[in-house]
Image 1 (tube, one colour):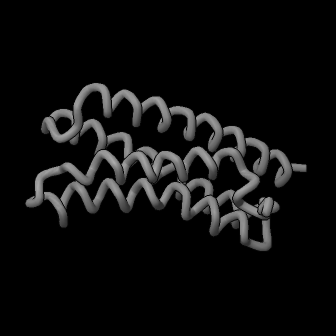
Image 2 (image 1 turned 90 degrees about the horizontal axis):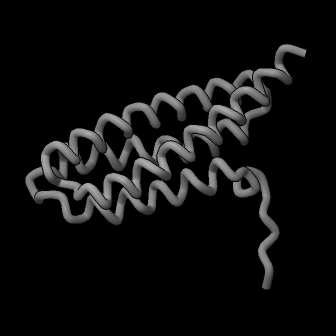
Length: 125
């Protein structure tokens, strides 16, 4: 049976953000056990916040609220960028894994900024 996509699932930015979350979880499962409540938890929470805020914003009743949630998502994206860089520097991530994550993170950022511009333009009219 084909599932009809509704709401946030139609948004390409959410689809890519969700892929990013899954990839972050895949690569952080091998972080040191002593980081479980430190860096592992922090990078996972930041990554999932990107997608979750897109979902929450899309469900809001106003474009202004939607834009606010997209801004929160964008801040989580920036936080994730740093956390992944730190993970690379600590040798918790390989260069290959980091590059794969970074490529998808940049793609999410571009889509997110495009959506933010679109929503903001609708507010300004």
